[in-house]
Length: 598
Ligand code: GLY
Image 1 (cartoon, protein in one colour):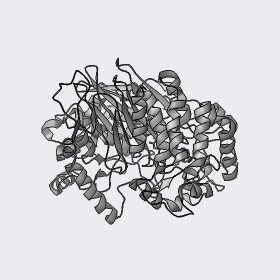
Image 2: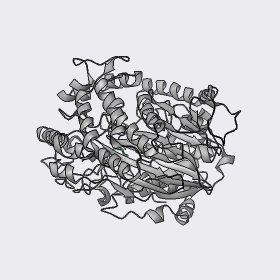
Image 3: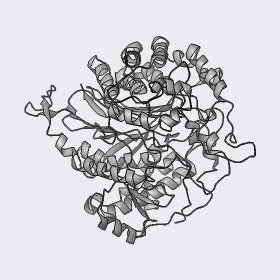
C-alpha cells in the first residue's frame, strides 16, 4: 500500500511521551511494570456488601466496586464530588457535571472551564447521544493566522500566544447537558466546585509535583503565578490551595448558568485578558458559542456495541475502523501483546491514522466519510493490504500530522440506574496556554494548536496542510479525544476514555480489546502496557518495558521500528458485570486518581 508520511514536530517542550530522557524512561518503566503486576491485588480489599437484590448476598464488594453509582477521575477529590451528587439522588449526567467542575479546581492540568471537550451518554434503555463542546475559532480567525509577518509558519503563534486560545466550550456543554438530561438543580451541581475553590482543598502529591514542574510556564503570566504559587514558590503536598478568583467565577456560573461565563463580568474579564495578551476572542464570540448535540458514532466488535464521539473528534471513527480490521483475526490465539498481536494491531493503527489525517475535520465545515470509514466492507478491503508477517511502510506524501498535546483528562460515571457518561475534556497542553484570566481565576486553553498550521504547508517539522482542518471563523479543530462506551446484549459493559493526543485513540482501543477480547478485569485492562503507532512517524512505541526483549526482536524482524519507554494515557474507566456490579478502574498512572462509589 502507498502510505503517506506524517512527521511530528520536534519543537522543544512539545515532545511526545516516548521522547523522554533515559532517566525519566527508567522511572516510567518501573511504574508501568508495577501497574501491570499489582492490579489484581486491589480486588482483595473487601469492604462492603452489595445493596442490590440482583447480586447474591454472599458476594463481597471491594472498595472500588458498587451496585449503585461509580465515578472515576484523575482527582479523587473530584470523584467524591460526583459521588456525593449521585448519593443525593442525581443521575450520571448530574454527577458528570459536578465532577467536571470540581476537576476545574482540583486538577488544573486539564480539568477546566476555559477549555472544551466531549460527552458521550448511554441511557439505561440503550439509547445514546453525544454533546460536542469543543472550542470554536473566534470570528477573526483565518487559515493563515499562524504565519508571521514574513509569511512563515510560527509554532509560537500556533501554540504559545493568546491567538492560540479557542472560544471555551465546557460551561456551555455542561449547561446543555443539564438542560437536556440533568435531574438536579444546576446550583447544586456547581456548588461543590465553588466550595473547593473558596474554602480550598488539600494539595495531593501529584498536583504538588505537577505545579513544581510547570512553574516556568505559568510564571510567564502574573495572574497564574499569583493563583497557583505561594509568594512565587511552589506549594507542598498537604498545603491548602484557595482559588478565590476562580471561586467567584464559579459562583457567577452557579447563579447565572452559561450566562455567568459567556456574558457579564466573566466575559468582560476574558475580553480584557484578550486585549492585554493580543488574543482574538470578542464579547460577540463568547455570546455566540454553541455546544452541539450529535448522534454517537457506532460500531460492533464480536457482538459488543461500541459507542463513541463522532467528528470533530477523530477518535470514535478511528477506533471503530481499527476494531473492524482486527475482527478478522484470531487475536485470542495470538495472545495479548504477543508479536503477532502487536503486529496486527499496529497495522490497523497505521491504516486508521492515515485515513484520519486525510479526512477528519469539523462536520459543520467538511463532510468526513464516516459511514465508509466505519464500515465492515472497508475494513475487509484494508485487511487485504496487511501482510501478516511483514510491516507495511508508511510513505510521505503531502499529508503530515502536526502536534497534539498529551494533556487532557478523562472521567467515567455510572449511576444506580445504569445511565453511563463518558467525558474527555481538555485545555490542550498541560495547564493550556498557562495563562490564568486575570480576575477570573481560570486557565485558558491553547486548543487552536489542533488546527493545521498553514494551508498547503507540509514540511519536515510535522505540519499538515490539508483543507479539512485549517482554521476558519466558528470552526472546531480536529480532536483525538475518544470518550467511549461498550455494551453487549443491551447491557452496559465499559465506560472508558483517555488523554494523550493521538495516543488517546490507541489507548482506548486497547482498553476495549483487553476487556472484550481478553476478558481482563478492568484494573488489569487499564494497567496493561500499551502500544502506539500513528502511521507516521513510522514507529511502533511500546509503553514502559511492557513486553520481553524476545517480542521486540520478533517485531523488528518483521520490519517494525520499535521504541520502548514512556507512559501512554490515563484511562479512568468503569466496568459493569452481568450482575450489575460496577468496578471502578482508576488508572494509577495519574497519582491523584480515585474511584468513588455510591
Ligand atoms: N487536544 C487534544 C485533542 O483534542 O485530541
